[in-house]
Amino acid sequence: VSTQSTGAQDQVNMTNDTLASASCFKKRKLCELGTGEMVHIVNYTADPDKVEEFELVVQNVAHCFYSLKCGVTDVRVCHPRCGQVCFVITLLSPEDLEHFVQGPQRQAEKALGGLVMEDKPNFSASGCLMPSAHSLDTLTSWLIDNVKGTSHMCHDVHKVQKEIAKWYPRPCEYQKYVHWNPENASQYTRNLIYGNENMDVILMCWPAHSVSSIHDHDQSSCWVKHVEGEVVEVQYGVPQLCKLFIESEMKNPTGAKGRCGKLKMITETTLTDQTVTDAYANNDIALHRVCNRTDKPAYTLHVYAPPLDKIKIFDDENNLVHVHVTSKEPYCSKGGMVDSRHVDVDVWNNELMRCGCD
Image (cartoon, rainbow, N blue to C red; front, side, top):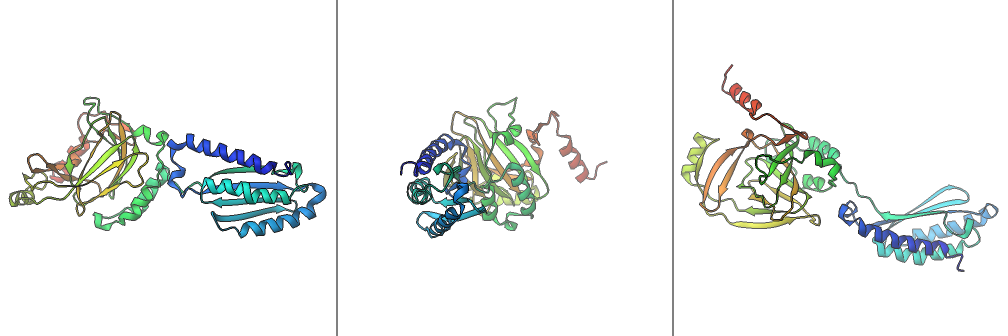
């Protein structure tokens, strides 16, 4: 009896090793993007002289496994040839996996006793069901195909948010976009990963205790995805704007200044490794600011669609507002490369073209 249960006992030990490994691997979080299910694979090969008896028992075992319901989400049985079988069982949790190994698998191995080579599985493995997770490249490709339009009203916000949440950030992918301001180490930086007429994908780098202004997003959607470290997104209700500012903005869309009503905070969300959801804002929802309240740097991925040309910046202490032209603010880097030019020639020349200058 002890030899017949060797395979199951080995699998119990392997399951414990898997759980310990998963605990050590927790920081990576890849499987946490999925359902939490466990996949268990176990393969048996018949003794060459007992193939017919093996096949009959395997047929009965497979029938029993297919009938399992409690804690089981899927059963597959691969039958490569007579005398060999591979069971692929998907279970809800590590605890269900352990119960399966100690229960149905052990019972199956008892029935297979004397019929399989060495009286144990010749192969077994267990692990998390890997989710369909994006790399940075596949996420960018998906965004290119699906994020289009001239305002946030063109977007399926929840669909895009769900897809962005599938990105599993790996330092080897985003590290080349991490650049800091050499002239002001306390200032956060904007690093362009990809941009077209429909969107900008930006890695924001937040030094310790850095904070953005309170701002709106004009006609754009703004999705924020946690990458590393810890940041806090604070959302504020959109205040009333005085008539003088509105008139000024109509005359001077890129330089208006004026007063606004008192800002009221709506929500405050901390984004960390353990955050289930990320952030989203547009002008129909709220203004926001992002801040790093820790002693360590942090990184977030922002998708602005369409790209931000201008924003309104709000002073919550003095109830003031002014329009800020973001297109005049150069990125710290583009495509991972730092722009070493001290003057943004492209912006200047584009403005000359709009003015009709030669």
